[in-house]
Image 1 (cartoon, rainbow, N blue to C red):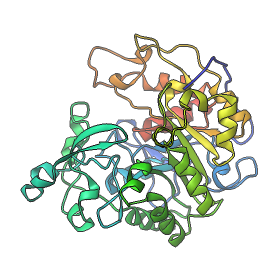
Image 2 (image 1 turned 180 degrees about the horizontal axis):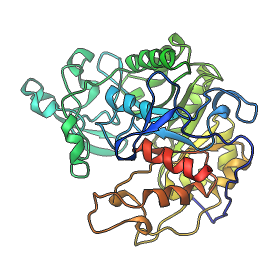
Image 3 (image 1 turned 90 degrees about the vertical axis):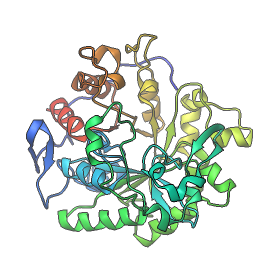
Image 4 (image 1 turned 30 degrees about the vertical axis):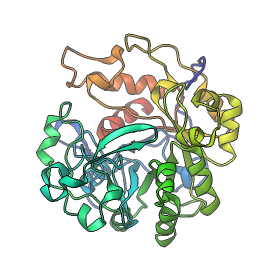
Length: 391
């Protein structure tokens, strides 16, 4: 994803918000929201630049990636709650369907690495090999389980080799349904006196439509039931498949973002439909204008903002931020993580790949490009980096 670069840097003009007005620094420097308050430094739905809805989100929006996956098993109510308590401006969910058509929150329909399903002998015969978006995967899949069966499983840490400390929480959280998340968000919004923003991704929508479990209609039914289907609703839709966003945009007015994978890759819906375009085409001014006809933003991988060389060091930034803004699109790239192994080589510290590197330096480098927000597994780090950046 990405072409040559500009060096557009944010100033500190009108509309900047103080970050920690309703937060305190907890042990180890974690930013923890005070109980009963709105998310730190936000005015959700309020008037950034005099505009409501997603345009009213805070300058440099911090998105809690899968909750706050750096500290809890991802896509659990424990992870979502901690992200919110830390002050994340938006909390992200991915949704996949069960055999009986319920939407549950998992990063993938393959739940082998995110649940204890392998420890359940009663489900041993469900292990199978499937082709999902052109990839052969062997494991257990949500579409082969009823919701009642999914509820007997417990979440586990997805990358225990990198985050041993998260394994402490293995087995303590259920797999939530998306409806449970909507109820949780409404309850938290009432307690805090401000809406809780959600960022929801349709995972593998072409694949699921092909097996009779279309995601969009199921998601829209829930959004309408919980009043999150309007232009100014505290919710953003997202998908790696542009046609999923197009389909959703015809059914609801909620703002939406097209996710963009690595340079040269091809969205799966384009592959199945014979559309020859790749991400390289979508990040051109023409491609951006096309996406702006049905979406309000893009979610590119960070490498489309600033590519890395063969050694993992950052190169010059591309023109993507400038070009997307010219098309009227916001940018929420993904994903910032604190561990050395995930950081650009320029910001790694020491020899332990799982130790924390100079995440603050990396955040600043990406903020300098003019992005509107960023997904992070470590919401507290992102919020403090934002506070320091905005002054």
